[in-house]
Length: 288
Image 1 (cartoon, rainbow, N blue to C red):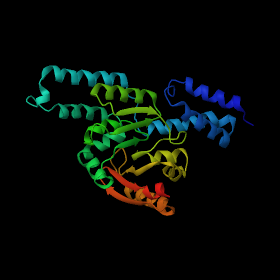
Image 2 (tube, helix red, strand yellow):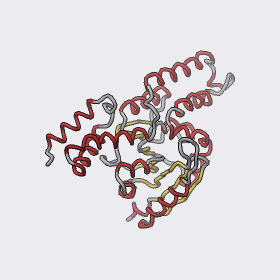
Image 3 (tube, rainbow, N blue to C red):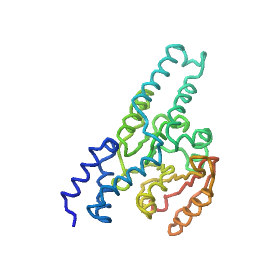
Image 4 (cartoon, helix red, strand yellow):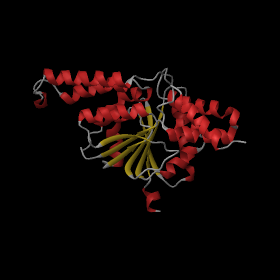
């Protein structure tokens, strides 16, 4: 039989570990409690660590040095501005294109966003053509995706809230936002299985549902139902990290459509070269 002391001991053991010390505490607590309930005290810590590893490894081959990445990015952009002090007039180059080029270097660090680089020029254009331009966005399990903001071509007053379970990542994103003067953007710790969130016109869950299902099978629909938004944008990979298709497009398309059978929501599908996107209209749910 497990008690509160068992729970607290396991949580603290994981928090003190080098690998998971920056993981959102609520995420650790949630998974420890589930593993205690399911496996008991003897296996709970090992099982919880395995789940956390699966979440983390879904996005990174190895953990980035965010401090080094930030310094390199700032140095490159600062050097460009010092070399072309009048670059805002575009006489000596396009500063936004230069910044995009440096952001692409950052996006390539994470497998999920690296796959998105090739389709960025049309990715948000096609999504927003269906949803309409948003005034607010929430990006769940965001990873490095908020760094694609310049490709969204949105007004400066669009409120963008990014949530992830990795503390070093959210600090890194906020440093980049501040450096670029993106005052409308904020990254915070958050977990859809442990927290409640406010309304946003659009909620992104990009390549997130497979990771969610890996944590808790059958949880995706419950999480989608909880979202307070006009449109929910979910996506899936269509190729493995090695570049093989392996029937992934059909598998995820069939799985998503079957998952949606119990709901009255309308949705549209967009297939990109590296990503399958579904745009779900939740307005009927809000009106109910």
